[in-house]
Picture: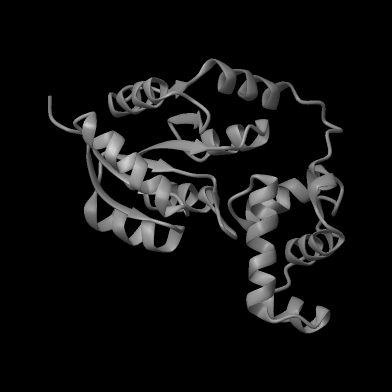
Length: 215
């Protein structure tokens, strides 16, 4: 059987090293790795691996950003999320953005290898616990409030972003550097499980931060 070519994205080098060794022992070929989405996207375009093994939390960035870019560019790579996040909305958003598998980092080696094999064959893989999380996301009460996870500053910035203000404009009003604003944006989007500003606007409307007319 031809080895599956795999690309790793995780911001912890020691975990990437462990995954590389485990996958090599399973006769899979790790063709590259990265700690953040920008470098990963360039490599995926160039290397064209069969499968992407991707963490959700990448420092101040989010793996959902990379999934969104892969979907936007129609890159022919199948994706498996390998993450600590057991948030139902993260599972739902990852699947919406094209992930074919979702595995929690507490899973066994056997489960991860089963997920990789299934996804490489064109199937979807959700373990029993993750399948339950997906169901929870579909059946969540509409008044569930993820905004409780945000700091007051993050709530302030999300309102400004969805009203169309750029990072320099937000920084000027809040006396922050544009780079600091970008970090806040990436962090709150990761917390909320959204990959881009369009999804952020939908979230803001759904939870009453702005109305459907943008006010």
